[in-house]
Image (cartoon, rainbow, N blue to C red; front, side, top):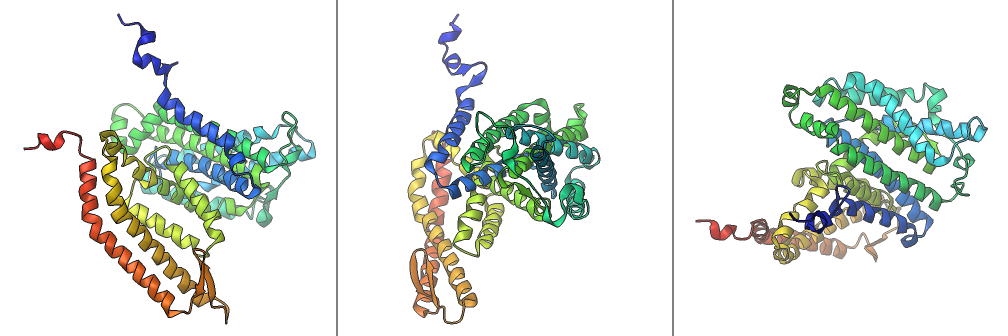
Length: 433
């Protein structure tokens, strides 16, 4: 008998966990630890904090949509309720009513979100599909409208604000700086993501996938589709509440905007953009959206138009989201045929990117032409200063855009052929008659 310690599979395992499963979490933890040293400015740390909060929120939403098949138009209320609850606890800490360390606050916010989700899920998870979506929309609008009525909890139009530095110090830190808040948020991001991933591996998480795909068959096997949806709904509300608590800790204020339909629609867009079929999809979507919202918005007023166009293109041509695009390249990588795609990508995808950039330049020049003040003809685009009224500029943009799209379309058949070849297992072509 082969000794287990010498078996190749045993050398790759420890405690029942494969190195391949543990490595992404270790790498992620190391990246989170060194990011403040790589991007040391306060603005960069603020963006990373916002990005981490959005990731937790998007992952909690994906527990509903991606894993349970429950399309929600009111998921922001669970983040908002958790955040408002955290703000009240923060104010109690300031008033000396209770004494707690600040890192505990997201957990309390999660319990607020869990309690509200448990109450709403009793009747909303009886049905899935359109019925659940409409109930979630109604609940979202109801809570958002109540935010200006229930002033004692939601604070009215001004919201609720507080001071995070009144919590008990942790190893001498009072969390007054953005770097300290970053590590608090990063720690909760890692814990929350790991717990949500482990939840997806539990029997309830597995059955949520089965109920999503075929609820009748799940019922036939003896599982209650309603209660499976309910447990997933409650877990999603808990982690959405944690995201709200992190938001309260970072910004020290919550308003009615944290509850409205716009926030719920934004997290739906982020999750779809990243990809609902993969656990890391919402992470990618949150990173991309946050960068577009914070960085791109500093350079153009049309950033929302570009985000909307990206979302439409993703839904039309890549239903699996950005994560799906990445996973599409796994078979060519396994077959050792990734190199066959490099030249077709350069010949077709690169011109398409130039064409999209030219189209965006056309829109930017047109927007400046229509909205600039009288006599203000000069503008800067892609580090080039020119006049938006110059016909030569318009001609160059139009010619480059049309030529780039024509070249991309001309090389598209070669790209399709290379893609088919790269996704064909080695030896399959010889086996065909």
